[in-house]
Length: 519
Image 1 (cartoon, rainbow, N blue to C red):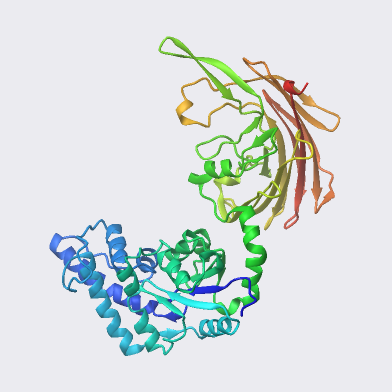
Image 2: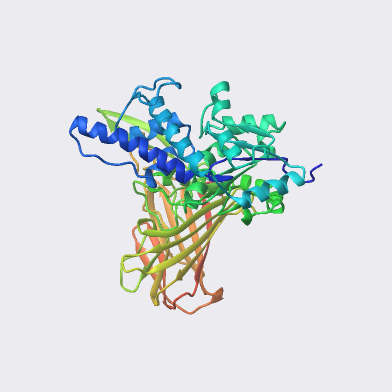
């Protein structure tokens, strides 16, 4: 009996156990190019061939044949009748073309035989010795043939392939049907099993089926895409992981993953949603997960909202005053920017990213962001930030902002601000309503830093923020030129330091927040 924390592993075939991708790609290329060339001549259009690398991976890899045909042809603006799964190979339907590809594939496969990843076979045998159940799930209707030719037909306790899918009317990847049925055949639940996949549609299926671990095999240098589409862990080969490693995931990794919301790439079009999901709060206030240096724009909307701070102001629409009671976007307490030498202050969100990771630990209430950005001169800058809204004292927020000039030395200016010159502009359907809710009252220096006092312009709630900042070099205090910067409704502190290459400078900012409702 197995003592492992997981009970089963379900493997994809092609790219994981056997290597027939080359044969598949050649068969797809032969079939598609024959069809495309004839269609181009018939319509008097230029012939654009099927790319056996990019088109194969993007449109057909891991999918049932008809879905692969349909997906690729749609990318070329071609819509064919679906047809029947038994259509002859010379019939111009989705199924007919798929069957033509299968004939070409089988001919080459029987002649050359499949490649076998011996490290995968060894890993399967190790699992079986530990009493862990193993199965294979593949979109291919040639799965049995491939295993027979590889002399591994008895390796797996269950096989759910294209033939089984046809019989049971299972949906293809990225739906999880074939993996769920394989788990059921092993007498297991999905959360007790590992899915091992090398295709994007396959890791999507593992994620969609809520399997305990979706393990991505990166044989085509697309690990980031596998991770982005559902792989919990990505490795290059099954020799790179052990049963103990997987046990560790089931013991600790699943819980850790469940508490953490992570993003490993930057997508501007998703940023406002991510900012919403990555809000930190404590019941008294909540701050959206916008980057420290971001201003309101098409892609970003920094916002801090405090319990009870509403404002009802009139908007004249068609000769009538319309009143809307708005939850006020209060001053941005976490604004931090930097500039290099005498250049402008830079928003890394508009620069090229070399790497990017954003993580909200929901158990600890900590938002972290790590990125490396590159400017037009090729200068690399690493930024790490950590943000909290205190539960111990709900009036306290804090951010740590670490900046490292990776490949340059220069005069570095870091500006930390309290920004009350903002409006409520986050909801498109309210764009015709009055959006200005804050009136500046006063701002200035304190004994330990700066403060900002604003007031809502109708409900007359006072909001006061005070910030204390310190600059560290490699976590030790550093002497730097300091200057107070004032604008209407906005106040900041600028630190200028002669920054050295690959040296980390840390700005620690602690902010207290009070309103007239607190008295």
